[in-house]
Amino acid sequence: MTIIESVNAHDAGYEPVPPGFADWTSWQREVHDLARRKDAVVLAHNYQLPQIQDVADHVGDSLALSRLAASVDASMIVFAGVHFMAETAKILSPDKKVIIPDARAGCSLADTITADQLRDWKAEHPGAAVVAYVNTTAEVKAESDICCTSSNAVEVVESIPADREVLFLPDMFLAAHVKRQTGRTNLHSWLGECHVHAGISPQDLEAAVHADPDAELYVHPECGCSTSALWMTSVGDIPADRTHILSTGAMLDQARHSSAGKVLVATEIGMLHQLRRANPRVDFQPVNPKASCRFMKMITPEKLINSLRKETDEVQVPAEVAARARQAVERMVAIGRPGGGE
Ligand code: SF4
Image 1: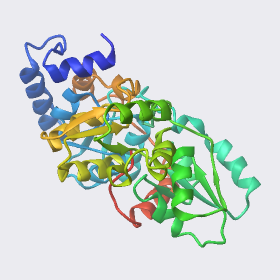
Image 2: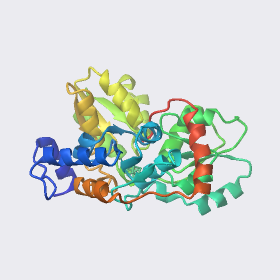
Image 3: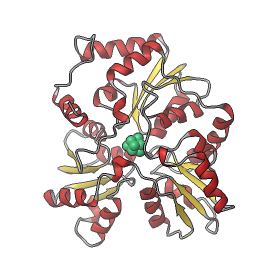
Image 4: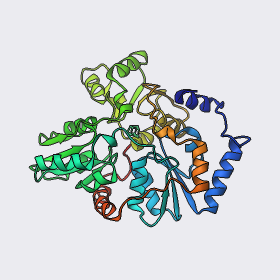
């Protein structure tokens, strides 16, 4: 069964339960019992499989979950997401044990830039301010001046003096969005992209909009189609008042208050589960139903149970790297909306 089939099957109630469990209720009970015995809290990203979202203590975007990780009263964090997110949780809560059910769950966007590459880029632009999206490794954050999420990226860049160069990394679509919003000409963009969001193409968007001309549109600024969405609104192909460029956290806020009949969503398909829960009266449909992150889906219900039982895979960040990365993350938290991000 493919991931898409698996997600759809779960929504339809046909997802097979993990080996050793009679049904989903007994699996959920075991997750909760283990978490209570181990003084652990289970955090799940919005792009996780629906079963994992449903069993978690908290579901959200990367930054909101990291902030929760730092503030919750538990000695162990089980992070159901990708590795850089669990690392950020460890950076913000160094005294807690942070585990991820599969440490191989990486991120194609975070992998587009290494700390060495960033040091070389900085050497080409002495004095420039480095703004790093949260989808970066701890080493890259440690080389950055300030982090940002998709919801506060514009405010973060606006906080930097207008005459100072900005190196924005690693997502070129988010950089283009920030450049458009700020009108800044001295912002240089790293040419990174997420394979999932870049895979939601302008053609996908056009086809979806023409098939459903009355639907609203939620577009994540990391998507390959975000520029196309803005262009289509400017030429009147889609109405500006029904097109929203939103981080995942902002999508949920918008969904809760929506009176739309149908909303087309351009981001990773796991997000649909939270949107449908936030407002069951609205018909949320993906712009590209194949936009599934294989790294996110490496966290399976079976691995989640095993990680709680064995307390693996533990996430470690060297203290010196964590201290420098924490400064960049804390500067971000001080600016604009605290939530948002992927
Ligand atoms: S959806 Fe893209 S940016 Fe998000 S974790 Fe997957 S590869 Fe990384």
